[in-house]
Length: 137
Image (cartoon, rainbow, N blue to C red; front, side, top):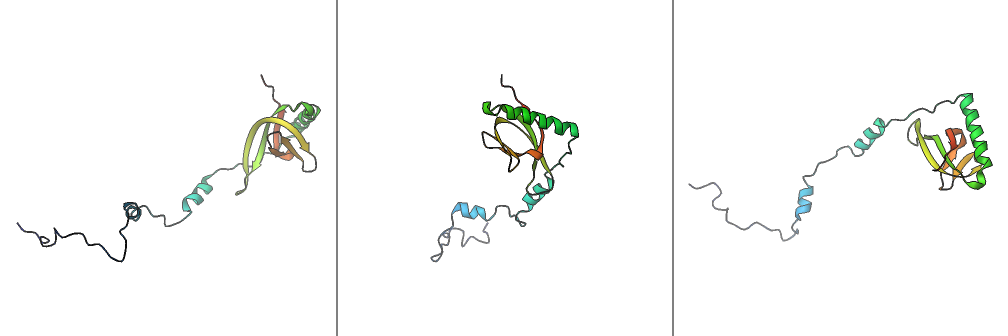
């Protein structure tokens, strides 16, 4: 039985003299998925990312924070470990999230109203929701 292309089936593959042959990797790239909307996935993820509102502290909670800050200040030369929970504002959306760190107290910059730990964390005092001395066993 003879086929429609029997006359050309055994001919060598044509090769261009003007254009170099494309590598397999580049040929495969032609068939890779195409993202028509660049950045769309990132935008959807940003919308889905949750933030929370900063809680308003009671007078008792503020008094406790102030007492603990005073206690920490009294031990500042010992660079005590402190356990701090604070609100971190989100740079892209309204709100933020609460972070908790344990670090060694360095000092309070009264001009900037921030607490600084030895490892360089700078926490605005007004964003602290709880702070206390952390006892190392």
